[in-house]
Image 1 (cartoon, rainbow, N blue to C red):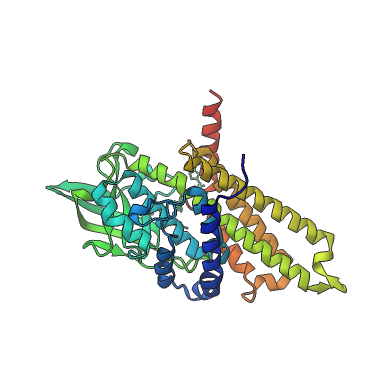
Image 2: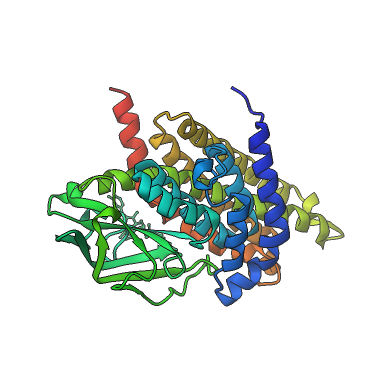
Length: 381
Ligand SMILES: Cc1cc2nc3c(=O)[nH]c(=O)nc-3n(C[C@H](O)[C@H](O)[C@H](O)COP(=O)(O)OP(=O)(O)OC[C@H]3O[C@@H](n4cnc5c(N)ncnc54)[C@H](O)[C@@H]3O)c2cc1C
C-alpha cells in the first residue's frame, strides 16, 4: 500500500488546483447567482487535458489514469461544484466512447470532447418517469433502412443545452433491460429538441434540461456498442461516474471545512475566537475525519478501476459515504458560520445547496445501498 502520489498524479492535481483557484473559483458565485454555464472555462479545461484525464493521448486525453481524474475533480469541485459536474459527465462520455466505440466513433467524437470543441458531453439516461429504474425507459429507436429513428423524452440532462456530443439510451426492443441500446447523437441533429432549463436549488451554474427526440434520425454508425447492450453500458459508465461524484463531494466538503476553519479563527464571541470553543473544535474534528475518509474511499475505488479490477462495490461505497459526508459537513459549516452562514456573503450556503443533489444523482443513496448489499452478499458465496 502506497499513499504517495506519482509524478503524473501530482502534476494533474497541481494543474487542476492552479486552474481552479485562478479561473474557476472567481466565477463560482456569479455562475450560481445568474445561472450561467461557463463555456469559456470548458474550452480552457480542454487545453489543460481536464476533459479527458483518463483518455488515451491519441484521442486528445491526458492519459493520466483514474486517480489523477479523481484528484482533478476534487480540485475543480472545491472551487465550483457546478463546473465539476459538467467536467465529470464530459470525462464519463469520452471514456465510454473510448471503451465501447468503433475506431471511427472514437476519432469523430472523443477528440471533440477532450479538446473542448464539443464544449461538453451529455449522458441522457433518465426519463421523466424513470430515474432509479432506467430499464423502464420508454424512449424508442426504430431501424428504418440504414437509419435509427429516436422518439421520446429524457429528463435532467446535465449540460444538455451545451453538449456537442450526447449519449442517448433508447429501447430497440421490448425485452426489459436487454431491449436498451445506446446512441451517439450530436447537437443540432434535426428532431433533437432542448427543453427549458430547470430552476434548481443548487448547482445553478450547471445546465439541466429535458431533451425530446421527435423522429430524430441518426445513421447506423451512431449505435454505441452492440444493439441490446445499452443497460450494460449504462452500468459500466455509472460505476466510473460514481468515482467522479464521490470526488466532487470530497472537493465540496473540503471547501466547506477550509471556509469554516478560516471563519472560526476570525469570528469572536465572548471575548475569544469561536474556534477556541471545544464545541466547534469537535465539529471540525468530525468534519475533517469524515472528509478524509471519503477521500480514501474515492481513491481506492479510482485505483481499482485504474488497475482494471472489479470496483462496483467500492465505487458505490465511495459515492454513498462521500455524498452523505458532504451534506453533513456543509450543514455543520453553515452552523459554524452562525447567521452569516445563511446568507450569500459567505460561500457555505452555496456549498450546502450544491451538496444536496449528490445523494440523488448517479444513483440515490438508497440505490447505492442496494448495490453494496448485493455485492457483499454475492462475495460471501
Ligand atoms: C441536477 C441533476 C442532474 C442530473 N443529471 C443527469 C444526467 O446528466 N443524466 C441522467 O440520465 N440523469 C441525470 N439526473 C437524474 C438522476 O440520476 C435521477 O434523478 C436519480 O437517478 C433518481 O431518479 P428519480 O429522480 O427518477 O427518482 P426515483 O427513481 O423516482 O426515486 C424516488 C425515491 O425513491 C427511492 N427509490 C427508488 N427505487 C428504490 C428502490 N428500489 N429501493 C429503495 N428506494 C428506492 C429513491 O432512492 C428516491 O429516494 C440528474 C438529476 C439531477 C437532480
